[in-house]
Length: 204
Image 1 (cartoon, rainbow, N blue to C red):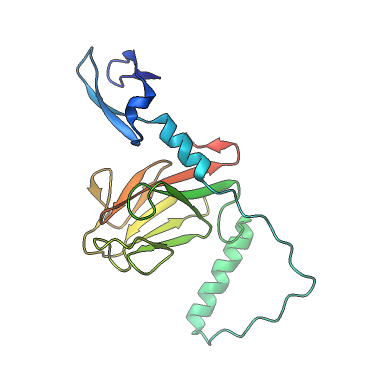
Image 2: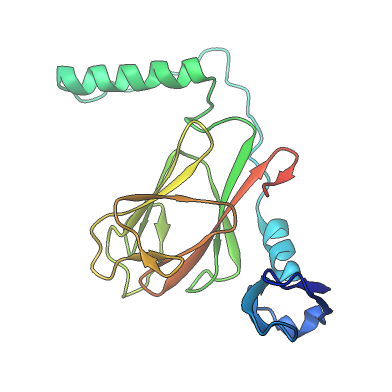
């Protein structure tokens, strides 16, 4: 592969097998001595292949069974749920997710390393023993962080007051921060990478 220095635009040849399976590697430009990181194209391609296909749409039966009545809610909760449902219908969303996108989470370390999980709802809870993503990581809090997918297709990460914090790009997550395609973040000792796809392929 060809490695290009982002500082001086110098180009040099590099054997992809020397990445040895890691997501990225640090280089020092032989021309300007600038130090930078380059991504492993084979690793990214393997993650994309591991991402499961979107679930098939199963037609509903002619007459769905009558749902069980929900517990009574306060007027405020009832109004909020009705307003949220109306907003999703008006936006043309399915299951609360924006159409034309596919969102996945790659596990870079921990018990599920080198696997990919499809995110199929607007909010995904990450925790040690509780949540949609269970890390079994003693450095992760029981309810550690939340991934939220907005109707415009943006993805946001929030730390839920965890003991050891949530980090991305070497900085602690305070409040909500936006995650971009292939951006990594860490909860305790567990590292993840968000993958965002359009119908026509990976976002730039």
